[in-house]
Structures are given as structure tokens and as C-alpha cells.
Image 1 (spheres, rainbow, N blue to C red):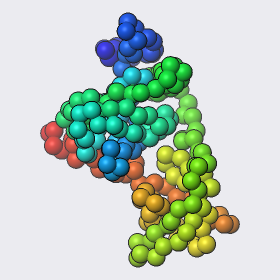
Image 2: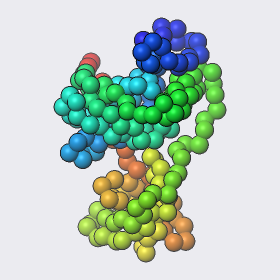
Image 3: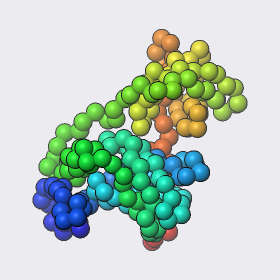
Image 4: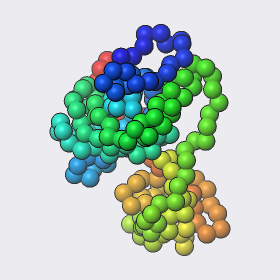
Length: 207
């Protein structure tokens, strides 16, 4: 149950039957349905056991969902129920991961209330599969090597360096070039802008 006291710091802890309280958050990310289609999403309420997402496309109840969320990384579970503009999913995780998630959600829920400083924007990691393909809008394709990647962008080794602001596609992710370096480019993924468009569309539908 969500607390009605929005001006007080919030904590997450186990209750009876190992259920967590949900807190209000605003977390951007992407999710994948069982047929491997990917879409942007925004989590509005979450606990280490379940989450409510604003999402442009819902799957079937009981369908497996994999999501990659800012600050939290990968979560997975099953779609529990549909709601206006999105769906609720449960979260499958070990006890250790739930404890870590509880601490992260507590920080996110209290960040604005307590005026906490921002952490690093998104953690960068080196992916297991580093070779991919960059496609420009005119159809030209180039092999590339991903140096590191986060939820918001990536650094890519590339033989060509498209101009700043150039829209490109890496694998299935739309992005734009934001920086040049000696052996390639840094790109920012378009998911945040897509999510903004989805939220605005949902708000127009509700008004």
C-alpha cells in the first residue's frame, strides 16, 4: 500500500507473507515481450515484488516480461494485470536482489523529498556480445564494436564518424551521435524521447 504522507521519507521493508510496500517512483526504461518486441516504458509504482508500468503495448496475462530500468538494471517476471495505459508485472528475484532493490527504491523515492544529490546518470557496463552493426538513415551499414553501454547510451568503435546529432540505429536501438573520440563515437539512445511522447499521448487520452 502506498503511503499518503508524501512529505515524509519512505522506507521499504518486508511485511507478512514476504510482501513489500510499493512506492511512487518515475523510472524510465525498456521492456521486451515474449515475442521479443521491445518498447519504452515508465515505472510509476514499484516494490521489489511487483511494478506498475506505463507502456504503449501490453502482452497477455501470464506472459513473461523482461525490462531494463534506469538505476535498477534488468528485472524479469510475468504480466499480472492490465490497467489504463500500461500493466502490472510481478518480479522474479533472489532474496539478495530484492534486498538490493529495496535500498535502491528507497533512495529513488526519497531523492526529491530529501533533496538528495544525483548519482551517476547510468552505470556503464561492457556487454558480453560486443560486435554489432550501425545503420545510418540512408541505409549504409558498418560493423562496430561496443566499448561500453548503459541504459542511456553507448561508446562504439567505428571506422566512420557521422556528424554530431546524426540519427543511427545500433542493432535495434535508435540513437543519435553526441560525441566523437579517436576510434569512434558516443551515442545517446532515443528511448527517453520515445517515453516522453508515450506519456504525453496517454495524458491527452485521459483529459
